[in-house]
Structures are given as structure tokens and as C-alpha cells.
Length: 287
Image (cartoon, rainbow, N blue to C red):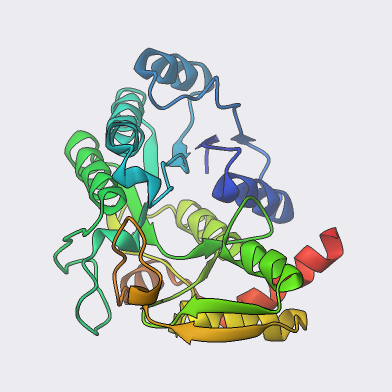
């Protein structure tokens, strides 16, 4: 399989990759600190890859503050596009395969249909545009790449929707949750397993793939499931997105078709609510 190098090791997916690597007995894996693996430092990346000589590099580093990106355009662009390009160049010059994580937000999300990898990407916010530009940079600069688009990522690590709902649900009697944005939650532990499945397959079927958990839900129904599973007694009210305006516009429907990744790598994908149960159990254990 060869050595694996994680960029963005301290983030949510980076921490999940570490947990899953331990569970799977993967030991030839490196989790450098951010100072050592700054994707805005091209010479530093070159030095790191020359020293470690990884067979695979997984890029979990990203600017993900969707609303702040509308104001911090240059920073979002630097991390999500220039950073991806820097890493692709370093991987290409050091014969490493790049696994780059992207997002469902590359889609406009204005049509109710399962989105395939061949559907036109047309982002409607700065974050989505910078992630799409990052994908394009990877495709242009390195042939040996897997781009994995995912959605609504959560886990027991870092800040995410599940942990926010559990916190607010414990503090308040009533919460208003947007009900007209539809997608699929993804347990980052499941995504980490899928990434290792791709590596262990030895496949060279490079390109763009979609990965989220199975099923479809709205943010309101996702929150209701969180409260039901965790026995949190808070009143949840469904509201339209127009009642809670945000700086960045979100796709109304961004459910991705996963048939390509399932058939190519023989991956079985868990249903979103089953994975949510596992995450909430882990959070209870940790507390």
C-alpha cells in the first residue's frame, strides 16, 4: 500500500482518518503538524514529500467557513485553490497519488435529481467556487488523483452540525431549523473508511467520485433525528431558508449519486441515520 501522508491532520476528517487507521491497523501513516504541512508553503510541501516519500497524500485541509468566505474571498481562494495546486505540484514531482476532498457545494442544487460526477458544476457561493477551482487545479496538475466530493460532514471531532444541535438542544427550549435545504449527512468516520478502501484497492481508476452516506434528508429532519436518538427534549420548528437569511446562498437540493464509487471500489455505504446513531453513541462515551 505504501506510506500515507495526511495534510490537515488536525481537522475533523484528519482526526477521523487517525481513528480509522488505528482501527484498521494501518501504521505506515504520517500526521504532520500544520506548521510542517502548510499548503500555502510550496517549498515546505516539496521538502515534506521529499523527506517522507509517501505513496498517497490525503488532502483534508480546506477553508470551510461558508458564510465568512463571502467576505474572506482571498483567504478562501488561497487555501482551497492555490493550496490544492501547491499540493498537486508537490505530489506530481514526488510520484505520490493525491486524494483530494471536495464538496457538494460545487453544484447549484436547483434541480431535484441525484447529482452525478458528470453533471455540470455551477457553484452559487464563494466557498463552492473556490472548491471547484481547487478541483480544476488538481485535474490540471496531476494525473494520479482521486477527488472525493462529500456533504454535510460531521463526527465526534471538531465543530459540526451534530455537536452544535446537541449543545443548543440542551440549552434551549425551542429551535428553528431550515427545512427546505435537502442533502445527505456524512459521518466522517465512514468517509475515512472509504478513503482507505480506495487506497487498499490498488485501483488506478483516477477521477472525481461522490461519497456521502445513503439516503436523503433536510436540515430540520437531520436535527429531529439528532434530538430523537440523543433523547434531547427540545421543540424543533421547521422554517424556510428565507426566514433565516445567511451571507452565502446554499444549494436547495444537493443529493449526490454514489453509484460510481460503489461499483468501482466495491464499497458499501451506510444509511445516514444508522451512522448518526453510532456517532451519538461515541459522543456519549466520550462525555
